[in-house]
Image (cartoon, rainbow, N blue to C red):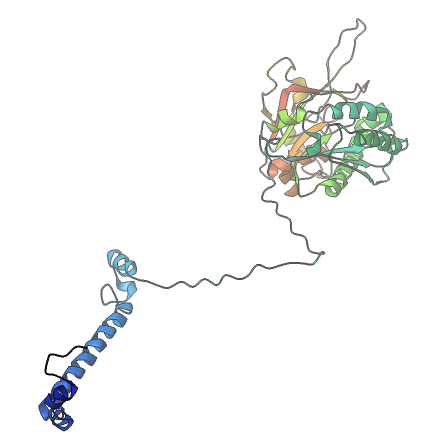
Length: 404
C-alpha cells in the first residue's frame, strides 16, 4: 500500500492510541451497559420471532367453544384452517411364490351384447346318451357356427349309454381338432358319469307320461354334473345344445347374445312331410311355456314331490306353449317372457349358473330339470326370455301319442 509522502509505518503507529487507553475506554460502565442492552434486544427479538412462528402451528381458529357446540358455519370456518398432516404407510407388494396358490379375478369376466369385440368365451355343453346316430350332423352344424371357434370350449357328458357314443364322439372330435384351419375349437372335454338310470330309447317309452318324472330328474343330474365339471372362470356364456338338432342358424350365438338376456331360448319345431309331400312344420318343445292361473291352482292340490310334464293329458295345466306361437317368417327378434324352458337350445349368462341356478334333479315347485331351472331363475330375479319367431329345427321323433 502506498502511504502519503512523509508517512511510514512507524509514524502511523506512533499516532495510534496505546492499547491500554483503548481497553480503559471499552471497559467504561456506559460502554458495557450499551453492549449489554444491544445484546438483550437482539435475543428478545429472535425469541419473539421464533415463538410467533411456532404459535402459528398451534393457533386455534374459530370460536372458543367445543366442536359439538359450534354452528355449521363456525365448524366450516374452523375446519377450513386445519392443516392436519397425513402420513401414508405404503407397504411393499406381497410376492406369492407358492405354486399351490392361484388367484382368479372374475370381475373382468362379463357377458355383453358385443361378445366378439370383447373376446368373451363360450362354453357349449351337450349331455349324451345313445347318441351315436346324431353326432355326425351335430358336428356338421357346430362347425358352421360363425362365432370365433377359438373362443369356444366344448364339453360332453356321456351317461348310461349302450351304443358306441364314446368312440363316435372321440373320432368326430379328433377329426375337427386336428384340422389346421379355423374350424378347431379352443378345447374339448369328454366326461363319463353313469347314474344307473335305465330307460329304453324307444320313442313311445321314453316320451310316455310315466317316464317323465324319473327321466327329467336323471337329466337334471346329468346336466349339473356336466356344468360343474366344465365351467371355468374365463367363461362368459354357457350354451346348452342337444345332439339331435337338424337345422339351426349359423349365427345363433351372436343372435342370442345381442338380446343381452340372462336366459334365452328359441322356438323348437320339426320337419315332417305329409302324404302329399308337404312339410307340416311340427311343433316340438312343450317345455317352454307361460304360466297360467289353472296351473297355479293345480299345483296347490299336488304333492310337492310330483313333477309336472307338459303336453300330456294326465295333467291339464292350461299353460301357453311357445311351440304353438310364432312363425319363422316373422320378426325373429320378438321376445316373450317365459316361466318354463326346454333344453334343446338355451343360452345362459355364465354368472347365472355361478349364482347357483342349476337344473333341479328333484321337484322344485313341481318342476324338474330345465323347467325347474327356469322356475329357479325366475325366483332369483333373472330374466327368462323366449323368441317365438326364431326357430331351431329338431329331429322328428315320430311320436304317435301322449302329447297334445
